[in-house]
Image 1 (tube, rainbow, N blue to C red):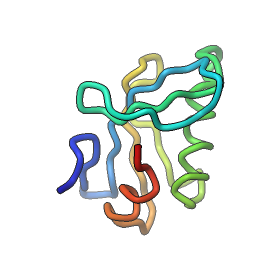
Image 2 (spheres, one colour):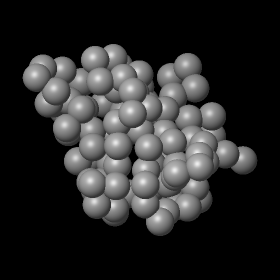
Image 3 (cartoon, helix red, strand yellow):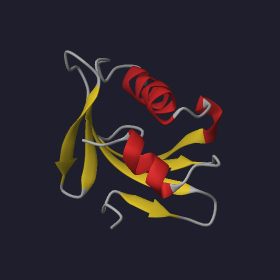
Image 4 (spheres, helix red, strand yellow):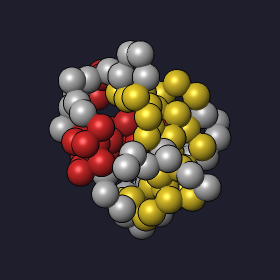
Length: 98
């Protein structure tokens, strides 16, 4: 069963993420209101948390950062990320297990 925070789109895979910046360590902490909840070490200043999120996702999913796009939520804790990479939903689930 596909988690609520993950869906296939026409161009790739979309993730719905709830970010908690300023944490001690960057990690997945579970879900929040149907979003994948990720704590980020970077503070929410000058777009640093968004950049850190994209870098962290690139490392976790093992795909180039240029294939990960923030499509909404630049100034919000709730973000929509789209993956334009040859990766399956199953691989995303395995890589981002809470």
